[in-house]
Amino acid sequence: MATNLEMIATARSATGQARAEVAKFQAQALKIRSGKALNINIAKALWSLITDLSLAAFTDDAA
Image (cartoon, rainbow, N blue to C red; front, side):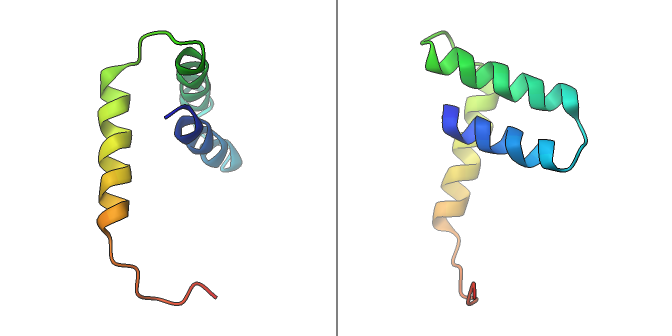
């Protein structure tokens, strides 16, 4: 979960927008890695995203 938050933060940071959002994602990732309580809304959103992507049928050639 922490890695997912860090990847989202990196992607958002690359756009140069939403600095507050990037900081929030990074702070949440740090909390998770240190064993602190997780914000349930973020966990549910990430779990939903991961589940949806795992069920998606990718048929196009990535190359």
